[in-house]
Image (cartoon, rainbow, N blue to C red; front, side, top):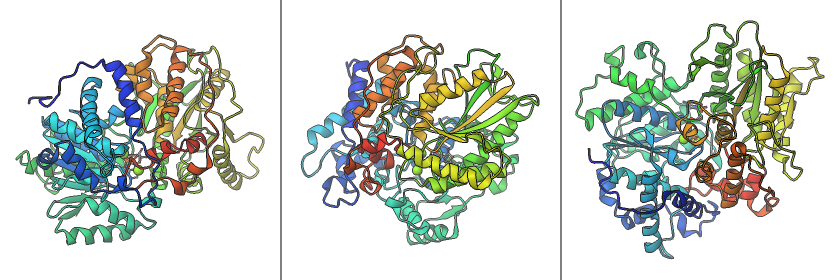
Length: 616
Ligand SMILES: Nc1ncnc2c1ncn2[C@@H]1O[C@H](COP(=O)(O)OP(=O)(O)OP(=O)(O)O)[C@@H](O)[C@H]1O
Ligand SMILES: [Mg+2]
Ligand SMILES: [Mg+2]
């Protein structure tokens, strides 16, 4: 199929231009609060104006869209769906959020992140056109809206057969909901998140998400709490939507194959994806796909699609690449971007089962460069450590007990919990030279709060038990924590294995993945980070991977962090100003309908970021 038929020609120098594009993108991050009704720039209807300005109205009508909302599992469901359709030979466009390292992760064409070159061409095409055509009445779109419009442009120009779209936040007023006639809709697991925006009951939350239902368009969902299901059913019947509830896939249906994404909850996401993909295949692909009730084993192409699905930062196991000597112990990171109470549970369960698997002597599933890692024989002493941060809008009194209790139920007890701000603020990690120093200016009050919550939990449960040992620690930065871990490994015997669960924030996970990984499973990390510490690289590419919703100041910090990890940067670091009170209260963020949910609001209030709690 003709790719890039709509690709405008460009002679831009992509390197410089990529940084410029990211700067332009950052300029769209707003500080607007949802409560600020006077703000014209937030009206949902504007999305339709933008589509007109970009000449995308017809394209979007013709796009064969699969639209997915939900509290948890949206991204995974979309990724599974995309992979299935691709294994049938269709050209796919996948739009997900948030991203871990590079904004291009959000736009996949045929399963691969869009190239920098293509990204730039479409980016500037949209950006410049909007700049020219917007005015007082129709101001520039906000960050997430712009990204959604960009996705529409990319998928239209690249002539994808199927566009799989993950809702950014909610449903009804999400920019992706500009799609009027999708082929099929999915609602993944509903739970409590973004309540400050979506409402404080499951019913209200479900109502927002059901806002993606369209008259007569079939929809699928997974088992939900009664209150949520009632609302979904109501909305479905109002719109004559045939809503079907699916149950988790079974191992048998997969014919013994493993899903590409780890964790038990993925069987549910995968099953939802199977229904979305089959509906699409039948309606658009004109293919006969047997309904799941008729078959005990999925068609081969489904299984292949599900088994090869990938998504970064979800249940990812990454061995630390900078442990130099095999005479010391070992360090393995378990990365998962869980940040809501329900996802804490599934994350804790995944981690517990994974480390238990690791603790079995014959385990060899996780192979990196042909060698087995994470393997822990009977003689080895495995210690589980938690590395945590969450946004301050989340409630650690919910998240931490969920995490701790679920792990405890599976017999996993953390030896220690480490709390860090998300973005690191200084020098290098990864080589032994120039060890980072503690920065006395960092505001760690949020981390100290997290620690207090943790200590209370520990205290309640472990009375009398080796009360001497310190159970938790706050570090000024992620590299400091990683350095501590590496030091501990070096000081430990060769039979000690540290299994570190990094969770609570996808951005923390992204940073940890970068810091720990030189040749992990991730292609992006592979391509960006040289496998040898200290090797020289292109600074520009480093900046690109750390840029997201953050303000440019934050990006400078971020890029500084990344570059100095690997290149031994010696720049002077000066910490950002102490947070300005006006932008830090939780009630102050969250522009509804506007942006990439909390990421935007996060970056909009840098002060709060500095509190270290912003990225989930
Ligand atoms: N069905 C599910 N039920 C509960 N938790 C889940 C489920 N699926 C995924 N999770 C948890 O949520 C995390 C994010 O998964 P995923 O990216 O698929 O969801 P998402 O809805 O796109 O989340 P986000 O809000 O980050 O966009 C996973 O790492 C996992 O911990
Ligand atoms: Mg979410
Ligand atoms: Mg997501």
